[in-house]
Structure formats: C-alpha cells, structure tokens
Image (cartoon, rainbow over all chains, first blue to last red; front, top):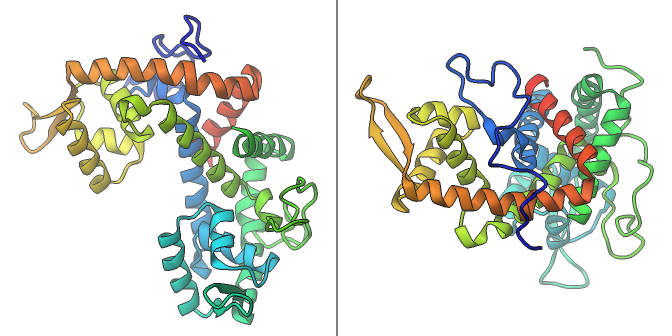
Length: 170
Length: 170
C-alpha cells in the first residue's frame, strides 16, 4: 500500500464529535484523535468488560483468562498444554504460571500423555467442573446480561460478528 | 439482579454457528461458548489490531501505548504525569517506565511544575513531534486504512460507537 494523500482517517485534522466531558472544557484532557483509533477504543472497552467480569465472578476468584482455560478444558478434555495455550493466544510462561494456580486450587490436573511422555495433557477435576458451572451462571446472568441490556441483542450480535471478523481476517 | 432461568446467553447450551476450522473436525480445539463471550472476542480482536499497529509503525519503534501518550501530550501540553496516566488508564509504575523509555529517546521531557514543585509536567520535544507526525501518517495510511477496508467505513463507525459506549457506560 502506498502513502495516499486521502487516507481513510486523516489524523492531522481535528476529530469531530468529542463528547462533552472529554472535550477539555474543564480540567479533563482532550482525547483528540485517540477516540477515533480503533485499537485504542478496543483496549478501553476490553478493560472495562474485563473489570466487570472480575467483579461478577469475584465470589469464585477467576480471571477472564482462567475462565477461558476452564471452558476450553471442558470442551476439549485431554489436550496438551501447548494446544490450549496457543488456541487462547497465551504465551507459554504466563500459561504455565496460570496452570500452577489452577492446579494448586485443584481445579485441573496435568498428567503425562500416554502417547508422548514429554507432553502434559490437561483435565478438569470434579471441583473444576463445579466451579466452572457456577462461573458460567454468574457470567451469563450478571455480566453478559448487563452487556446485553446496554447494547441490545441485535447490536451485541453485530459487535461479536465484527470482532470475530477482525480476529480472523485482519 | 437475581439469577434468572432465562439468561441473555445460556452458557449451558451448545453455541451455534461455530465456523468451519474452529469446529474441531480436525485437530483444532472447539472454542464452544468462548466465541460468544464479548470479553474474549474483544481481547482477541484487540491483540490482532495491536499486532498490526506494531508492524505498521515498526520503522519508528512505537507501541500503541507510547503512541497514545505522544498523541495526548501533543493535545495537552504541560499536563502532569498523573493526569496523562489516569486518562489513558495506565498504572503508575508502568507509566513511569514507559516515560523513561520515551525520555531516553528524547521524544518527551519531564519538568518540575512551576505551580507544584512535587509534580512533573510533560512536554513533547521537537523530535517527539516529528516522530509523532510520521507515526500518524503510518497509522492512517497503513493500519487504519486496512481496518477500514476490512469493515467498510459505516461498520467501522458503528463499531467505534459501540466500543465508546461500552467504555463510557458499562
């Protein structure tokens, strides 16, 4: 792609429509071009959603990443560490320390693979399955239900579709 | 909110519409409910967009967070560290080490505030301003233009609107 004189988004111009309160009329800083950057907007929304997730699931002390590992283990029992980590896009050292935490709480176990003695397969324990079931209920009835209320089911679906497209094709 | 029998998203049911390739017909793991979780989808899309940002701005060696700091400094010269960090939602220790990096590259300077000797105000240097101008061009013509191509301008605006709403109201 060559540098064009009419880029899709001209970052040299003042952006329009900065909502009041972000406009810097008071002591608030001007966000300017930032509010038009998709990466920045994704990050801010993601942080907000993760904060709410953590609040909703607080009785069970699960982070979003731990929840996704448990979900994936339930769906895919007996897969090895590398497969789970790479599916979730979690770096190996981070994943190993996360597993240490889950294992010390007896939510999952690592076992040597019967096929490949160098590899570890992962399984949910009964306790892990029970915690996951409770977490799913909290997530559905508190967290996702509130998001659904905010956006409405149609917009929520549209948003999921666009995010999936970015994750898959961008 | 009470636990309802008809939650907005029933995580106990099999999700529909898992695209081929993620359906686990081959060795691929089944994502299951994960693909219906907004937090997970936001995170995956955000990682993809940040990766592309880093690639597009590689000649200038700026991360998305560093870029947003420079943008904010340009728009709001003379604000102090705390204001910039809290506007961007960056934790103080992370922000301080990021500033160390930007300052060692002479892209910005910290100066003692004339009003409050304990506080540091931040300013872009001329070099910082020049790098930021080049970064804006790369972001607009390579990164955001590609996102625009993928989604189309209307959907891109709709996406930005929904993300801003989540960040503001959720």
